Length: 588
Image (cartoon, rainbow, N blue to C red; front, top):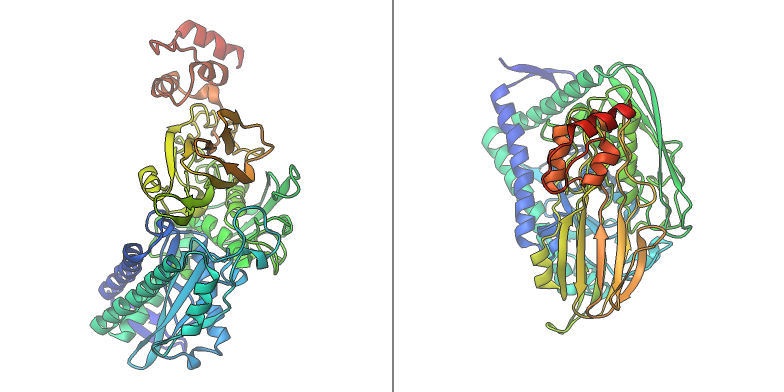
């Protein structure tokens, strides 16, 4: 039966449910093909292997229709960037077919200067019907390599909102400016062309959808899809008991004031079918480069809200967030203002999202997880490659780590952090082929997951040997402030770093931030990701599950006894029932 929708003027219209479902799958297919073509044509591993990008379709007003997701926190960032471009050019009346707009402005996108965002207005029969957009990570945008930055000016080339292409004519001056400011121009230009390919793919496929089913039918269907997303989110929000919920967690430091904890305090207010997330008490922006701008702050709230209310609903669109209100003053670590440094923008927001879940544990204990490793755990390194006689810039990550346990199941191991969503960890073999390095070990870390009735996931350790002199930078967080457990569950281990110099290992760093390390050929660095927090009391975990953990090497026999009260023979893996009952009884 056709559903009645309303135009902006309030006039009722009929929407064919079959066409609506075709359009729903159609816009998903469009953004997925945008992703595929970007990956096929990109020059850098961080795009085609790690998937550090996001593609999307947007309404003429800049509302999200569908996201080909790479980075979840760009749910808001890309939409606000599209809206900023509409405003910059004085409205859609001044946009023309053949235009493509570009920016990497951190305070618009919410992230660092490495994220270039290209936006193409889509016209159908002379009418602007939407936008195709692609954000992707460029390996280098100029600026300093390594070390700490304390303002945006040292972090690279800033591109305000400009026309990359004006009615089909490419802005050659802009290309020349980019080329002369980056260290690897061929790669930058290759990734630029890949992004242009992605937005043109979005335009072509969306126009095919409009031609086949009609402009009005498609646009009406999109409106209905967004209305349905709103209704679903509101219905699930109503299942959360009304109330005000608060939680606080801490970050290690900003990389400058070492050991000075940074508070992340959030408030969640639920009333009926609406939720308000208040970031007023989140720490103010810091001197180090861990800030992000306000669009990422909104993105933190939206990622948490979607996980709680509509995790399996697709396409991701703005209808799902109409029942969410976000309070976020300017000048916080997730709403930083110019000229705050932004280079490692993605780190603090992960803990913010974790803390929202922590706040909601008393209300919906079955829908939240314990803390996770919450970091890319991705070192960067650079040097001269003797095989190719070229300067190289490498990144090795995201590494992946442990996720927090749920009320009903163990946390997953070796999985990328919250901010990175659908991104992948970098293959060792691919990195070895491209850079003068050798991976000596790549392994799960026993006992890294928090103990609990349900155990937290395990972290990973990767030991990498330099085959030529390299400079290494690690910027990881949550070393001294490890992932927390819930409902009596144990904390996990934090993210760690160690260096082998001249055959000797050094690991006694106050945090996991070693911003400049000079390694000679034969030296090595080991990056270890944290685990996930446990959920529930560890002594309630079935002894047979602990036995299997020991057999698999996830938990040591010593930790089985000390943390779980289960005595296991480390050779035969047999449970000593009498010793186990005695040990567990002593803790009851």
